[in-house]
Image 1 (cartoon, rainbow, N blue to C red):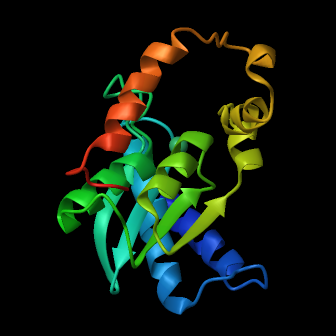
Image 2 (cartoon, protein in one colour):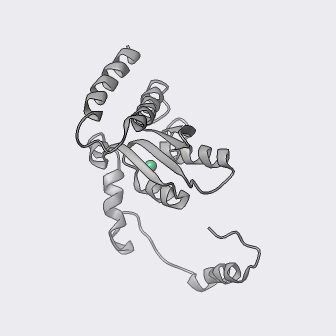
Length: 181
Ligand SMILES: [Zn+2]
C-alpha cells in the first residue's frame, strides 16, 4: 500500500517537475526523486518527519539522510544534517566544495546554517517552509524568531561572562597551528 502510494505521489510530482518553475535539469530530477523517496521510506520506518536529502559530487551521491528526530531522540537529526555528516565523512573534509544538495523541503534555519558552514556549490529544494508549516513543523516560526532581537524571542536569551569568553577568542587569534574554516 505504501509503495503504490509512493508511486502515485512520485507520478504526480513528476508532472510538476516538468513545469516551468523547475530550475533543475533532467539529471537533477533523479536526485530529487531519491531525496523524496528517502522522506517516504523514513515515514514507512517511523524514523521521524517527512524529509529526505541527498548530496551529490561529480554526479554521484556521497551523502544521504532522512529525518530521524523522534526515533533517535535527537532534535538535530534532520535529513540535511545527517546527509552533510555522511558526505563530509566520505570526503574526509569539513567542506562540501563542488557538491550539490537536493532536499525534499526548503531547509529549516538550523540546516540552512549547517549548509552555510559546509559551503556546497548549490542547493535544490522541493517543498517550501510554508508547506512544512501547514503540516505543523516549526520552520517558518523559527525563521520569524531569527529576525527578532534576543529579548523578543519566545525562548529567553540572556548574555553573561562576555570577558571570560573572549579569552578563548584571544587564544584562537594567537594560535599559530590552527585550521581556519
Ligand atoms: Zn532542518
